[in-house]
Length: 234
Ligand code: FPP
Image (tube, rainbow, N blue to C red; front, side, top):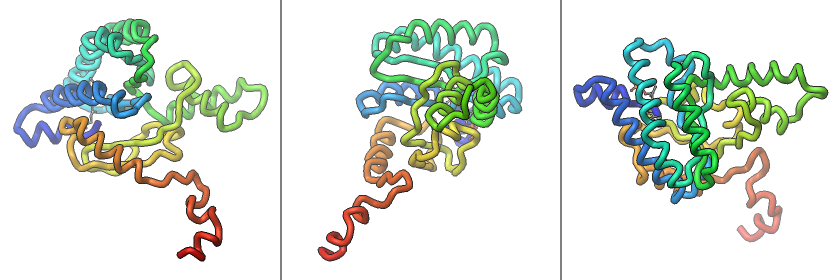
């Protein structure tokens, strides 16, 4: 969700206004996601490296996260949205931790959409955590087991799905320590628009482009695996 700051600067308003506009974009996208066929949506809200931002900006973001969880809880339950928060909790305020616990408990039964908010999240730290857990395993883990260890290190539960589609707004083309294991075969889309400009229409457009991508997972294209008959026809 990159570009809140530049969106604000472009309008001559404080960065905090950009983050609030980003919060409204979150609400629009979460509302639209189930009908667009999305079952799991992970939003990168605050990376572990974002602690290096000025304290007033960090405080604004933490306040927004707590407010979002508090105000969206009931709507999430009504709409079948389960909310879970990824990342470290020990550096979050007691008040934010309380909102997270209450929201996760209240929305746990949601079956239409799993909304995962990454707060104080670092993929490299999750991989380090998983590597520590390997020491407790009785045998070297295979990929499926290691994926569970990464999930355990990320949010205390196994079963994180691989990412199919990753969208980054704000014009930068990098992953910035986000879901590095889970994105092994993700299709990447980098958009020049700023996060507050993201809308359900943009999501639909990206999904349409995603559906045209041939996902080969290292295998040959479907046409090539049909063999020489295909070549003769051409
Ligand atoms: C990166 O853009 C964005 C963030 C570090 C914060 C993302 C937070 C929100 C969208 C607020 C609402 C979120 C929830 C879950 C309610 P940036 O500020 O670094 O933008 P810039 O690169 O233009 O400066």
